[in-house]
Structures are given as structure tokens and as C-alpha cells.
Image (cartoon, rainbow, N blue to C red; front, side, top):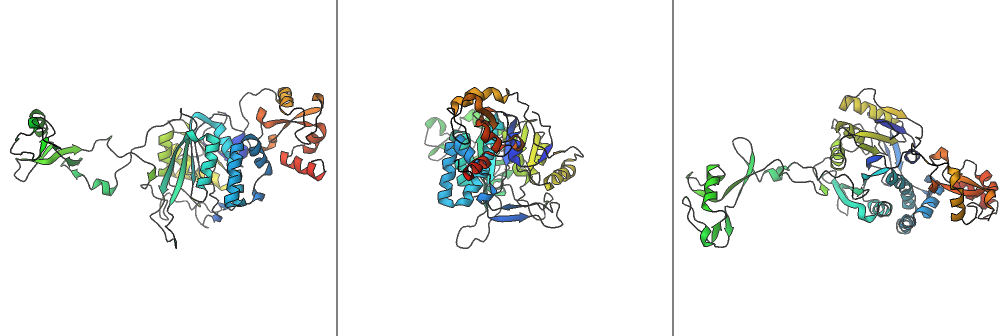
Length: 454
């Protein structure tokens, strides 16, 4: 990987993603804006003071070239976005275009053994699920995780909204999976157990089984199962008795029929399921709190990182905000890369790593667009292939030209993170290439329409 560990990019994450090597990332967690129709700002005086972002989307917020690129490259994705526009409006369409063009790049940079967790809420979760199915394939969907972020709220004439959703996708069947990380018992669950003098938890289970089996219906140490049978033969019962694993009645001599002591072993803790209620939000008085809007708890990220990555793997957060993912990855011995368009994110990463992990002066701050280290042939070598693909038509004015009058052009300009990969190349005639210059494809088409050529 051409990007060093502990790097924070202060830039548009789309440009940075386009400059990252393919299949270089092991795990992506993203907590993007939710299209909540709200504006967020950190309180004055907090550690995150100065951090702010809007979460209201209109078509003026997206590059028209993104929409055209999606329609051309990913028709299923385009249809999902078009359906969202019909059912939810142009604001949702704009938001999904912004997300879709970035998800395509995230898929490219993920290793085959990689996974992605997208954090969202019910505002857009169902539409994002359609996008994710189109980008990653529905067979790579693993879980819709419900995280209860608080106990409840007053919501008028509806149920209180107290959860977020995480959409978990694998890049392939080779994706890293370390099993559901063992969870601690809740107080309610622990109340079902008793504690022995050594402090070990156990519960009492039945020594008998339903049904009457003559060979298991004997009297043993003064106890007889009525209309049932012993679960074990006499030799096994004596073995359990000698081991102190059978509870007695008040006389201390007669075994209880429901008295088989079953201890809670280290591997007997309940496994994490798809509803997470044991991780609490970052409270106002929490030591974790930075004041950053929408801050997520470290425990949430640690669970994800443990389950879907290994030591020294590379974790990417393309909307890293107040650096919770970076801190959690550092604690767990993973490498990490963060991207955020706000300069405040860099300050927060440094501050939190120094305060919470004890790392000083180790964060690399970059404002440039990385360049892929992947070796690609000279982009001009694709001219013959492109000429056949476009059937001799200029991809601007749609006029047919001889091969020698065509010029290879970058659809996404290099100064916007475009690469020499063949899917970012097209042929333009000399006039269209000159008109486009270093602009975007959308700008070229707009100029051609103004000139009456299209």
C-alpha cells in the first residue's frame, strides 16, 4: 500500500479514494451524513469546537458527472437512485448520488477478504440497502445490525426512535470473520445464576429426564424421580456427587432432582447477535466526549474491528470526523487511514491519540490526492479498444471521425483523482477535447448544448 499507517487526509474523500490502490484495505467503517435535513455544529468551548457540517442535500450539491457516470457504468444502481427520487424526492436522489459514487470506489479498494460497515439511520437506511445490494451484490449482504443508542425519547404520535442501523457487507466469501465477539451477560441474565464460594457462576439444571425408563427409575441416596427417569446411570451420578456438582435438600444429604450444578465457562458467554443493546451512546459526562456532532462510542468500533479484521490489517474511515475509528484501530493493533473534509478532524485525531492512546506526533496529515502505485499501461495504448467500443463516435459531439482524428481523454480529470484505468478513458475529437480541456465531462456536454451541437 502506498499510503502510510496513521494518515489523515484533509480532502474530499472521493478524490482520495480514487487515488488509493485497488484491493488495499481490509475493513471500511463509514458514518456519513444521514440526509437528516439538519445542520450540525460542535458546542463552543468543546474539544471539537469549529467542527460543523450540513446534512441537507439538493442537486446543486452533487456533480452532474457523477450521475452520468453511474448511469453509464452501473445501470442497476442508477435505477435504484431513480426509484428513490420518485418515492422520496430530489433531496434523496442527490444524497444517494453522493453516496453511490463513493461506494463504487470503496468496493474497488477493498480486498477480497475485506468487509464494509455503513452506519445510517431509518431516514435513508432502506434506500442505502438498495445501493449496497447493487454495488456489492445482494449475496454479499451479511447483516442489518440494530444499535440501540439510547433508552427512548418522546416522539409524539409514533414510537420513539432510539436506534441506528449498520449495514454489514462482505467483499466476497473470503471475508475475514472472527466470529460473533463474546458479549457480557446483562444484569438480568446474570440474575439467573448463583455464585459459589469461589465466585464462579452456576445454575441448577434437572437431574431427571421425561418419560419412565425402568433402568433409570431407581432410588438413589434417598431420592426417586416420580413419573420420570434419571438422566444418568448410578455410576455417573456418584461421579457427579463426589465432584460436588449436585445440590442437596436442606438435610444436606438428599440430592435435589433439579440440582445439577452447571457452571458458566469462558466460552459460554452469549454471542453477539444482530441487535446491540449493551453499547451506550457517548453521554454528556463521558470521558470520551469531544463535543463533535454525532460522535459514536469507541466500544461500537472495537466490536466491529475485532469481528472483521486481524492484527496489522488496514482499517479505513472515509468520514472519520472525531477519529473514533482511528483510536479504536490503534488500540487494537490495526493500521488505519482516515479521511475528512474538515481540518478540525486532524486536530481531533492528534488530541485523542495523545490523550487516549499515548501516541505523540505520529499522525501524518495530508491535503493532497494520493497516486496509485498500481502499474498501468500508458493510457494511449487503449485507443484502438476505445475506438471499437465507441464505434468511431466522439464521446462528446457523437460525430464519427477517422481513428487518427481521435484523442484519448480522461473522463474524470486527473486533478479530480481520475486515473489511467481504461474505465476512466474515452475518445474525443480534437474540437471536443479542446473544449473540455481540464474540465469534467458534464461541463463539456453543457458547453456543447449551449453551442447547439447536442
